[in-house]
Length: 109
Image 1 (cartoon, one colour):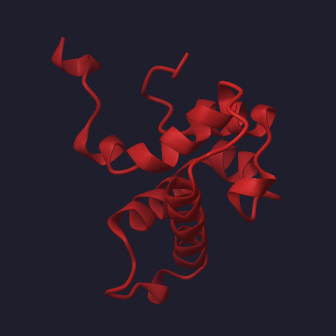
Image 2: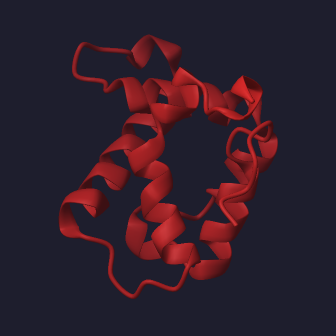
């Protein structure tokens, strides 16, 4: 039973993942605050994944976690290619990203 519980690591990306789940389930609009969070985490994570020396006190723990996952999982990196903001995320893209986020967790479906 405890093995089914999300890890502390995966909970760090809950809001990022929530934005993707909303899109995956057909929501037409993601709340502005959540959209901004998604974009901020994505941009910081990419910067850090490309250059580990880019770490700074302004980096969020969520961005650090996502950067680690981008480096560890080719499928996640590929699923997010071409995504520069939440506006670029289609329902199919959201589904693909969710399938590739932390593969050891169950799907959001």
